[in-house]
Length: 88
Image (tube, rainbow, N blue to C red; front, side):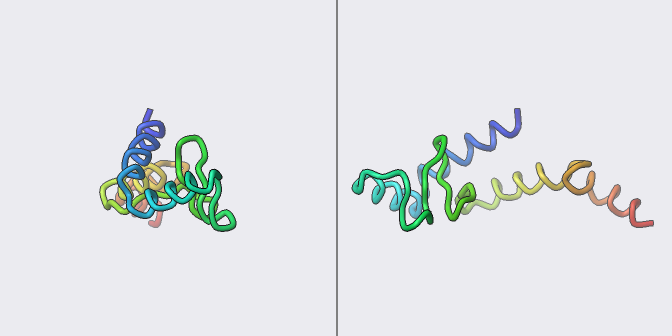
């Protein structure tokens, strides 16, 4: 299942991301699951920043997420050819 694979990839990259590591350390030190007025929080093993899943910097993963949500009939279009044909 692609969505589950993406979440696992995000979790693995988050574990190595300096910004996430710092936030997690601060939360552990304070004994909380939310930091800086909801800026950071942990939910289901994922870090959320400002209420959205934080995707660490990494072009390959970000491109994969965009492709999954954009290149589908419901998410946008089925690629450049189909998008072009719809515009004719």
